[in-house]
Length: 351
Image (cartoon, rainbow, N blue to C red):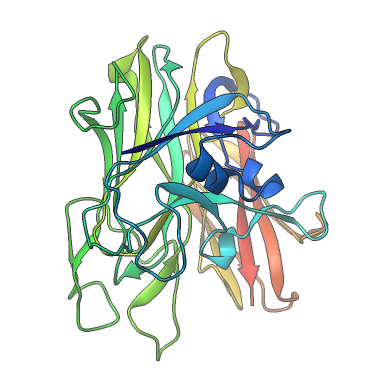
């Protein structure tokens, strides 16, 4: 068994909102952008390169010991890499030309021995309040063929890498267990859990002649932590697949109400764009938690406003709007939905 201590920096989410909560933990893994071999070096030597500082210790454990079988020299355990989808390549479009590149953390399950993988990424101890929520993003390298699965588990006692300690299962993402015969999901077999891309969203669709392999886009998930109120907990992300490919994580966040946390902004708009990438038109889907005035804006990579759609006052519930993209240049954009209680942004590619 290998146990490695990763020193990762904490970054603060930004924005302007009326209502705020506290952030108990947030990690976007962007330290690897400034020192792109940090995670790999830590896995080899267990040391942190000189000059690297941060606030959170994460525990990276490869408890299966099965080496890479892809031929690409992938490290054991979790390691830094670029997002799989072009939609996720840029972290932000504001204040940079070119925009800042995004970094995620991933785990390899394409291994030499074809053994079930147990790659653990565990937070340091987090003291919860009375009503906290865990958020994170994930994306598989491909789906449905060789779709990677993973588990999110919680321990109230220890960070030891065993499932008996982490007996509380918060989320289960399915893996492909048998290949199918077409380019859809219908003839593939999956384990129990959420199947990324099966609902037709958060994937880069291949063209008409392609095989059944779509790249995954980062998708946000959440799990309520009310059952563990006022406890000190550890959260583990465990890559559990056998002979698939890669899984990635980003933007791990625990948001709550402790007085000594970091001020964090509330965002309940649930913004989603479809299709993405877009050509002539994109549908902006969003959810409102109360009646509010809604404004939708489109920005280019320099932060310049391209167009604005005013939806006026809208009731609580799910809504959608359309942006005509046929007359704008191909490239990367940001869609922003603004309301009286907050705002949400999402990256858009026009091609």
